[in-house]
Amino acid sequence: MIKRIVKLHIKPEEQETFKDLFLKSKSIILTFDCYHVECLQAIDEPSTFFTYSHWKSVEALNTYRHSDEFDNIWKNTKALFGDRAKAWSTQEVVSLDNSVK
Image (tube, rainbow, N blue to C red; front, side, top):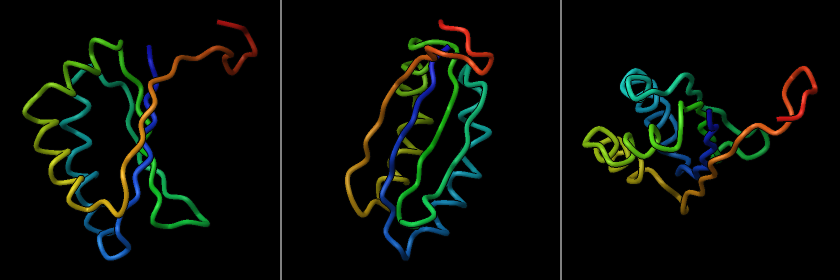
């Protein structure tokens, strides 16, 4: 499993639009071997959002990223940007029970 973190800077006037778009997109994203997806907002910098998702594999993430659904979601999201997004694909190295992976 991989965990994906995407940092997004959303224009202040578009924050509610972004939250609505995320809520509408969440169920679509979860159909692509995505086990979990959530949206977080920075407390001290409200224009900064993070999406955090768990994917079956890199291949599952790439299947989503090359889909028409992603193209549509990303096009609508990108229109709300105040700055460029950054993304990281990660894997767990220490679990909650402190075991090393």
